[in-house]
Image (cartoon, rainbow over all chains, first blue to last red; front, side):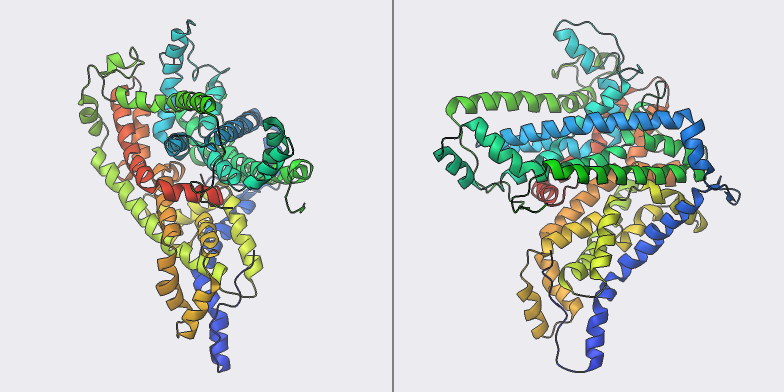
Length: 312
Length: 286
C-alpha cells in the first residue's frame, strides 16, 4: 500500500522550512477537506438528524424520534414493497450479470481474431445502461409491439404481452437490463485472468491435468478475489438503481408497484411528496442495508475467496 | 491489478475451437447490440412503420423524426445540448484539477493524518448519494442555487468524486518516487513538483478521469431531475424524458433524440476506449 516516503523536500535548514513542508500536504488537501465537510459529512449529519423529524421543506422540522423508522417497517406497505422489489432485483440480477461477465471474459481471454472489437461491443452497454435513452429503448423493446415479442414470433411463439406493462414481468425486464450491462465486470475479470501466470497451467499440463481440472484447480481459485471484488461493487451499484425504473414506469414504480425500486420510492417521498424526514430515514436505512450486505459478503468470503499469498 | 489487458499472452486454442468461439461471440455480440441498432434504424422510419419492422432493413428511411424531434419540446434541442455541454465541461475541468491535487497529497506526500483521511476518502466512494441529497437540496435552496447549474458543478471543484481521486492515486503509485526526490533536489517545491513533473506524467489517468466525468455527467438524470425544474435549463436526458411524459408518444422523434443524446458518448467511447478499459480494470468504475 504505502510507497510514499516523505516526498516533502528535505531542504536543509530552518524549522520554518520544515513546518512549511509539514503543512504542504494539507494545502493540497484543502479543497477536498472543505468538500468533505460541506457536501458530504455535513449533509450526512443533517440527514441523520432530519431522519428523526417530520420535515416538509417549508416548515422547520419537528422532532419525532424514531417514528419514521418505525412507520417504514410497520405501517407503510409501499416501503416494504420497495424493499422486496430491490432485494429481488439485487439477488437475481447481480449473480446473473457476473456469470455472463465471467463467461464472456473466459471466451475473450483466448487468442481470437477481433477480440478487441468484441470487448468493445460487450462493454458498450455498461457505459450507457443508466442513460434515459436506453431506458426508453427498454420500454419499447419489452412493450406490446416490441422487439422481444417480434423475436418470439420468429421462433413461433405468439405473444401479445406487454412485458413492461405487466406486474409479473416488469421487474424481469429491468433485471435483463442490468444483466445486459455485464461489460464492466467482464473487463475486470479479463484483467484478472491475464494476471494468472501461464506457467501454472503449463506445470499442471505436465502433471497430466486436463482442461477441466486446470480450470477448476487454477483459474477458479485464483479468480475468486476478482469475483469477490465484482460482487461487492455490482451489489452496491444495483442497490442504487434508479433511472430505468423511473423511465419505464413514468416515475410511478408501476405497474402495481412492481418496479418500485427503493431509490425511486425515496425520490417520490422526498421530492414529490416533500416528506424529507422520511426520505432521509430511508436513505440511512439504505446505507445500513448496503453496509450489512457488504459486511456479510466479507464474512462469507472467508469460505470461498482464495488468496494466493495465503492471506485471509 | 494490471490493466494491460491486450499485452498478456492469451490462452491457446485449436482451430475448431476458434471457429466455434467466433460463431458464439458473433451471435452474442449481435444480440447485445441489436436493440441499439434497431433504435437507430427506427429513428429513421415513419412512426407507423416502426413497430411493424423489427428488422434493420434499409428501406423507407427518412430524417423527418430528427427534424420534428429537434423542436418537439418547449425549446429546441440545441438549447438542451448547450446546457449539457456547459455542465459537463465544467465538471470535467473541476474533476481533473481537484482530484489530481487531492491524489497528489495521498500518493506522494506523507503526513500524520494520512491513514485516517485516506480511509475516509475511500469510504465516500461507497456512499450512496441518497444519504446526502436531501440536506444538499436544502443547502442549495438556501444559497439560491436551485434552478442553476451550480449544484451540478460546484461540488466537483472540491474533489467530491472520490472515485477519480482513487483512480489517480493508483496511477501515481506506478511512478517512481525518485522523480519527486530529484525534483526536490533541483529546488522544486511540492506545488511545482505537482504541476511541472507529476501532471505531465499522469495524463493517461487524467484522460480516464475526463472521459468518465463526461459520460457520467452527460448521462446523469437524478441530480438534474432534483435541482432543475425550469425547462430552459434542462440537460439532454431531462429533455428526452419529456417525450415520455406526453400521452400518445411520438416514438420516431423520441428515438431520434435518444440517438442524438447517445452520440457524444459513442464518440468518447470510440476515442477513449483505451483509457476507459484501463480505468475499469484498475478501479472497477462503471
